[in-house]
Amino acid sequence: MKTFSLFVTCCLLGLFLHAHTIEHKGTVLRHWSIEKEHRFIEGSFFMYKNGDVLIEDAHHKILHIPLASLSQKDQAYALNKQEWVAEINHQHSMPSAHLVAHQPMFDYKLLLAFVILVLFGSYVYMYADKQKMNYLKPVFAVSVLIMLCSFGEKVVRHYRSITNPVSIDSAFTPFKPSVHTLWDANYFYVESKGIPTTHPMMVGISNHGWQQQVPIPQCYIGTNAWSIPLNPVIAATPVPVSPAHFTRGAIAIAVNGVAIFNPYTNTGVDALVDGQLDSYGGHCGRGDDYHYHIAPLSLYAYTSPTLPIAYALDGFAVYGSVEPDGSAMTTLDANHGHFGSNGVYHYHGTPSFPYMIGNMVGQVTEDASSQIIPQAAAQPVRPALTPLNGALITSCIPNAANNGYALSYTLNGQNYSVAYSWTVSGVYTFNFISPTGTTTSTYNGFKPCDVPTLLHDISELESTVSIFPNPASDLLNIVLSGETHETDVQQIALKSLDGATVFTANQFVHSIPLHHISKGQYIVRIQLANSVVTRKIIIR
Image (cartoon, rainbow, N blue to C red):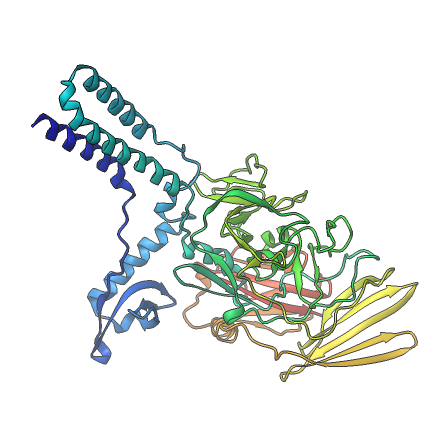
């Protein structure tokens, strides 16, 4: 009887300590009543957005159901769920992420229980009947094994994080509809054209850093979208972001949909130090794809300082000079980051080397070409060119038809330009204009695409906020319509593309005087109660 009691006690002790790691995964499908259509659907609550309840059915298809069409009971249920989502959205990870990193490798309660078990076993060994010890030894061994399993599980959970996709989405929201986001159980996907809308490109590259590549909008959509892991795992040994690793393709995606590459180029030089980057830390690759090589800190002119400006392809966020809680950035580790107060790792972008990521903390897969997979790919439309030593870019301006650019530069004291455009069928025309004449080259490339929700979101914004005329010269008018009221407007700001604020009002105004503002391109940013409206305008 004593032997049996000892066995039960030891097993229950080990199982109790081990039980905290057991998870039960499953989706509960709700029976939703659509009263106006006299039908029912089965699915789980996904989110509430713009008056629609998003319901995920058993086949993982997202259904958009107007809230008003549901029964009163289902409406109340959806709104309660949305309140819960809003509450956890203030965190940067789900509650399970608190089990993640920056905890001691051994739980001291487990350690204390283990010591007690060993001492108890030693006492029994010294004073118990030696014949009974033959029965007690296996019982004690099983108990120790269960205890060690508890330690082992604690170590495994220490390295795993579960990120809230709604939290990630909030970082990209200020730059919509230029970016589109969606997610599944494993990845958060970012669709974009890879072209920044809040700052100019290419100006600032040194007179020996331009490789004659120009920015062409890419099709990072569908199966070619950027993928951010939703369940990042801490690597046993972080892989250095260096000339030996990740020299092809991106290591992160900025919240404006522009890729961020290794600070080292494929030739092994620091792109910033070598003068290859423009004033915002970007340039064009051999596929005429615009991307950054350092943290795009300028984006904080258009988003909250407590939101990430990028997500690394290992799944961890990149912040700027402040922590997610708004406090000043604390000491960084060798990876250029640290664990936050919520127990989740994140990086920080800084003006000095390594700029963003020193070592890739999360587990990633690097293929034979030294790029992280999966990731999106650019589509070149012409052969890559070589550096043009002495050329200094002076401007890169969109054309009037919004289907191309004019890039101007100086060389040996003379003015040159490249005027290039594309058609809807994918014909790309390059006009190389020099003091001696114009040379034209034409290429058949990929058909231009649209970010999936771009047109839809623009139509929604235009029905809510009208900003005209565009281009404007003396006065810019703002008219609200639909369900948007003047009291919903918290701030109206007019910013230059370099982030400087030239006008601001902390309430609704019907117009912005422009006579004192220099000509050029600007961003109108209207902060509403639950959303942000941005629009690019031209002042002439």
